[in-house]
Image (cartoon, rainbow, N blue to C red; front, side, top):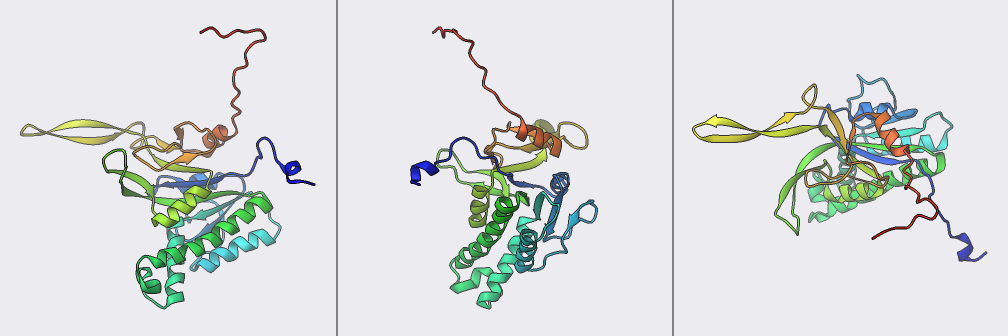
Length: 266
């Protein structure tokens, strides 16, 4: 059989790979807990108040890889694997790099000059490969949870500005955001208002839109305010809930078909 005969056509449905990041307490883990049959691999201690099934707290990156390997090797009912969180997993990876080079800081690994962060990518790729094996071999969806940070972004077409991004080193962030099908920023909907502070001065403040300090939403499309993307044609904004996200992911968008004999007029 020639290579031409192996060409695949059309869409190939696969379980989604989602990276959800946001501020503490916004509801990232709760969102993941409502995914189909989830199991958590926790690298930070914050799931006690959420009803979910989880592995014991991982204290090394080998613990994370062992949990992923167990899910790949054993039969189980789980349909979603959740890694919570990426930024704490990164600390475990840095610990592994430091142990490898017998240093106390990743900045000093392999003589310094940012080489430690490059070595960290080797561990990240092992994690990604293990997650991908679960997705391809077991049909599990993947949800990666991360906290948010504010970073300076040097836009070559505009002035430098602040934006939200996952709280990861830039090398790890680039690897994971490229691998995932969607990077979603969990935040609260707000608007800006100008208030008088006296003496002819004003200041701009953020005011939540909706109850409880602002409606909780997912931003699904990148903007100057945040890093985000998706390969599913999601709208720019969705409510922060699993049913809303799944409804948008599974919605079939059909192009209006022209009626037979219809002629386009210029």
